[in-house]
Image (cartoon, rainbow over all chains, first blue to last red; front, side, top):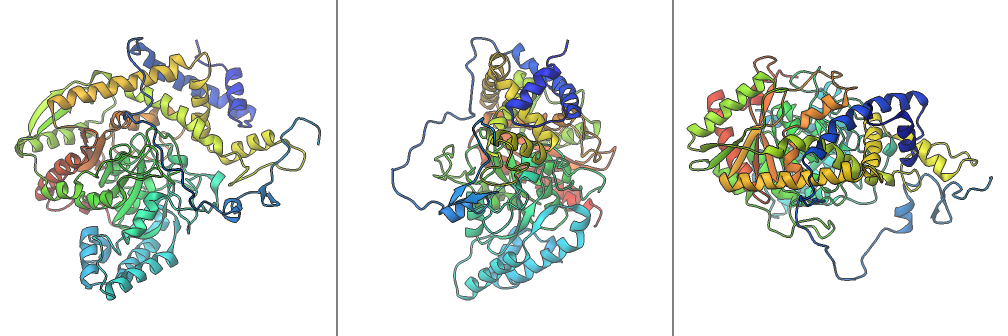
Length: 99
Length: 496
């Protein structure tokens, strides 16, 4: 039985904001199925009594004094933007209505 | 002897004493790059003008009587995953083609402060995802030992640059082995410091709980000098350790193992390991014993689950980290014709800008984190992470360092594993555990495999903040092998 279906891969591509072609979906479905089949082994040893580790080291939140520091100027922040208008990032429409 | 054959420590001393100028040293390396990089493809960008300017400023400081650090004026190749204000930063991806960051990474800034001369930016697997540098959008880098083989990855441009004498030093990042594996397969030294020992600020993020900057060099002392130059606490990185940098340079100069307990990890070996790699590894263990180390076999039963855990944790973190590449604030934007929505433009941009391995990992991570699968995949992988850390803890009660082959095989031919992700992932089999637990680990050359004449690496793993032990043992092994070989392993490499 496959671990992941082509439809699931198409759903993942949508969630991941990747516009994939049909050929790509076929290709990735096979590969992801192989990979997921192989990595699923982790559940063999992950018993309820083992606490999860999100990090290698026992780190706690770090704070710094709330002081004003130099940050990027608008020019610096916008320098690499694909489109700029009135000192802002210009983006395509974000609401659902027709253009 | 040509300037490009000298060690970083030697070059630093020659420049400090005024015997050669930093400009001469830099020009010699720029000439070498022009000569051999068309074959090797280690560099994505060569910064001729700024390198010479930096070298001139070191020479001026010397002339003015200012004290210079041990690496002032020494050239370095910088992995193109660290931001650099004055050079393009691509992470090996089309999505960042031509991108100029508005700030320097902390590692970049510290290289500059130490007077190191940045020659340019080196090739890598896209966003540091890979073990061969074939996943770069800008073409593969080639192994200087055999141009038909991979130089390791993801830091393959950095390993190849140092192994082909284009630079005495380079930077890398190690998330699952991306410094140690390329060092091993090109016959040089590569070190993954303790997680949090070197700053991630300005390092383009792949898997933030694993990513660790570290040095490449042709010998252990040079690696230690570079390690010391860019490591240490950084308030700009919230996971930076608030501790002194371990005494790595002193350890590299000391280089002895008498009385040290060295553990051989029982679980590394057997199926999938090349006989020539195992033979060289066994010789290295015998060598350590002959130098006075006590060899102990150690069992780390959970290490067999490290690779699957890693290929859930790293893709999960990457799927989140790479969400920032949306075509809105920087980088590529595709399909913005005035009719499409932002969401459609994002999906077209990411499909055009990311290569296959990055897409695979983003989708894998999205899957592992999705509701219904989270506990079985990401949650279980995090538990394995706990088990790996416990294995290391138990092992370091018995021994001072652990050793293993760095990689199961030598460098494979370009193209051999390109469309077989699971085969590619196996290259990181021995290096991943130290990433999951944050330990320090180094790879040093231990000979050539009989089958193919390609370099083999010895991995030395130490506890968290025990970075100095890696250098101490690495330097001892290096000295003993060089006595036996009559010089460094790299002198066996064919000349380019």
